[in-house]
Image 1 (cartoon, rainbow, N blue to C red):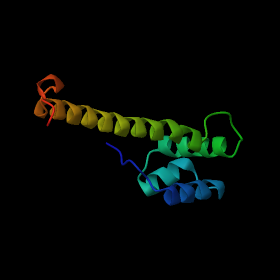
Image 2: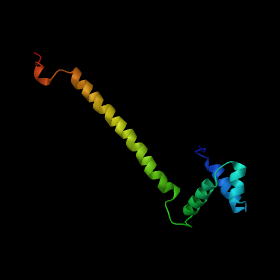
Image 3: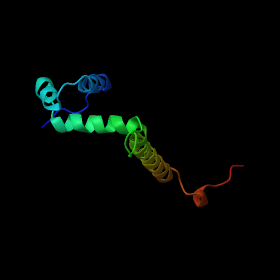
Image 4: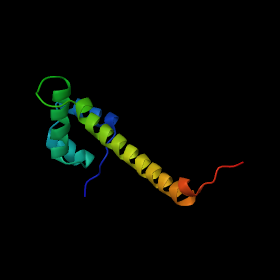
Length: 101
């Protein structure tokens, strides 16, 4: 299983080495990463610079951020619903409440 989550600084250095003329297979071997990873980074870099069509890194990140926020809101809603349920169980129904004199 490969390593996930390379730092942007590391990715940038790999791309700089590619631009400087190093071979993809050589870099992959020396840095112990797959050639496919390097190809993917290179393609995404070209998209980000507007040289190829596709979703930019920022555009790809937006749905992930939205999904995380939706999950947070669903968790909050579930907690609120549970709190309301507990309050209803603890409080007597309004019909049983007698007005105070």
